[in-house]
Amino acid sequence: MISLETSVSLASLGLIVMFVLLMYSFISFLIGPQSQGPDVVVQPEGVLIQIVSISAGPGIILAGITYGLIKNYGSRKIGIILCISGIVLIIGNILVQDMISKIPQILFVPGIHPLTYALLAAGIGIVVIGIIVFMREGKIKRPIGEESF
Image 1 (cartoon, rainbow, N blue to C red):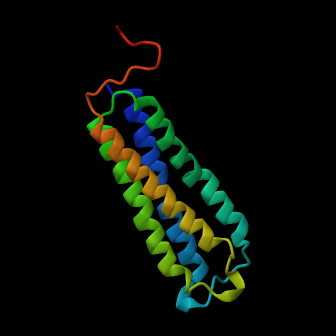
Image 2 (tube, rainbow, N blue to C red):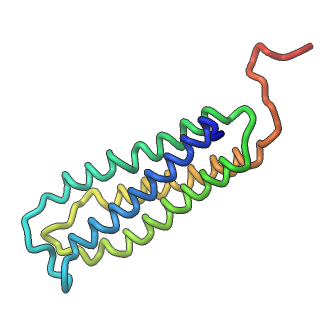
């Protein structure tokens, strides 16, 4: 039986993978064939907001919820899942940053550089949370007020 914490961490991993794939395909679409841009009229700002709000935001929030659920006793399995989530987010953003320079100037979104840096920081934070959860396995830390004297 899969626990709630494992399910939430797997959902976080799935959303982060979805974000990386959506961003990669969106940037590839903006670059277009022969680096000329797409053949149709698009509004890249709206699509960028949509991609972040559908996948990256909830994925990062679910990673934080996983930590909140398991912070008192830890788990190696969930720590590994969280570390993988953070690494996928970091690598995906590095790939996207390399592709940003190829976007035609007319379709360039000014907020895309700060967004990628913020998501890189979030990926590093998720990896740190995963390491904390991984190292804390088996050490039960009782909440304040439940100490036995």
